[in-house]
Length: 319
Image (tube, rainbow, N blue to C red; front, side, top):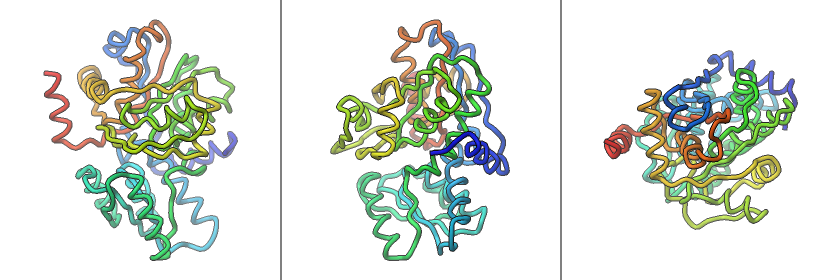
């Protein structure tokens, strides 16, 4: 992993590209959750999601470590791909991303707009990831995993910002896709010697990490069908699981209906847009409102990249 000096070095890379994102305590959310709740606004990055932090640190480390590759490739549901496309464009490095069929049209468009070559393959993220590995070999490209120490070091800077800005947090809710966000938060919490509980959040329809946490070993699932595409993982990363197993207080499952309700709450109470995974942390806090009543709690709004048609449907359902 990394030490405080490594974390600060990652922050320096990121702040050359965009400033620290804000964290706000919204009074209407406090009334809704019955606690002091801080929102870490990772929807305020250049790609609309926290992943861009990891893309920047990974690409910089890659170029410093050895010969420049002819290009990089990875699999994604969108935000990881945007992060690599953004980072690759900044240094003139070609980027290819593999997405499953039926992926978000607007995330696909954003990746292309950042300059990535987009390839559609497979029924879900895990099948797209297998194809990305195959193409990396056949095309001679550098394969970027979705979980890696450099990605964690980059995204961990959001936790550093939050913990520095807001003292004495009792708990922090973090959505889990493949795990970089929650692993970064756990490691920064430990580096700073804090006692904040880190609580992971998964979809009840994509709960491989929750099952793994409960059984003490990596458990895979046959499907990951959820509105929160950023959490649609069937196969946990073993390295991520070990960090989560040791450092998380628990993992909360939320339903798609709870995620939709949280999207509406963000819109109504803060006028911020949240994609499914971006709303999941708030959904979990609302799920555990009785547990956190009267405490100081934070949630990660990890991204805002939701297709307009889907978002319109989600908002209309609560009318």
